Length: 119
Image (cartoon, rainbow, N blue to C red; front, side, top):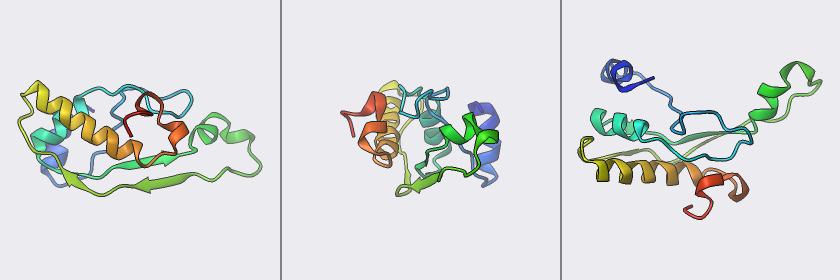
């Protein structure tokens, strides 16, 4: 969902879930982020709630094969609001980093992928 599609949803007070990497991870570890989620959050000045789904990959990959489903874990971080100008590339990058660190902190160290050293 791009900014034009998300703005009315956020403005109406609804929740928008985003995957800031811009693609799915093949191994469940964090990939390099795009800046779109930070731009949207900065523009909307809305509450950001970091949320991470852990152990979803085997469920999605082998859903029909499981006799017993593996445990899927959902973790939430402390909510925050990003401040600054969404038109300022440096501020967008800082906001992206803040969001990434909040999500990486919710993962076990071996799953932090691209951001293993940052968290």
